[in-house]
Image 1 (cartoon, rainbow, N blue to C red):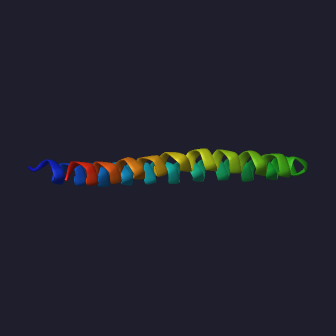
Image 2: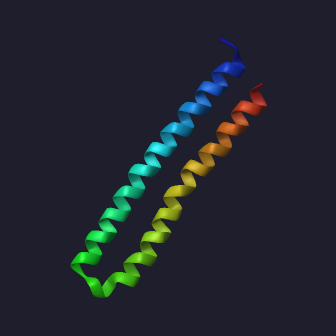
Length: 77
């Protein structure tokens, strides 16, 4: 197998795994936040702000993985 083909396959697998992990993480964070809002409605604004920070940090991983995948494809071909 050529190095460029292996880089493309690896990039696709890495990007897919990162997207799957981020979607599971985001779902978990959002569901726990909604559960907390249902239990303590007065803490709604604090929970929402913390949720947005958490979702932003979770979304950073797939973006970095996407950049690395693009670099793998274009620098190895």
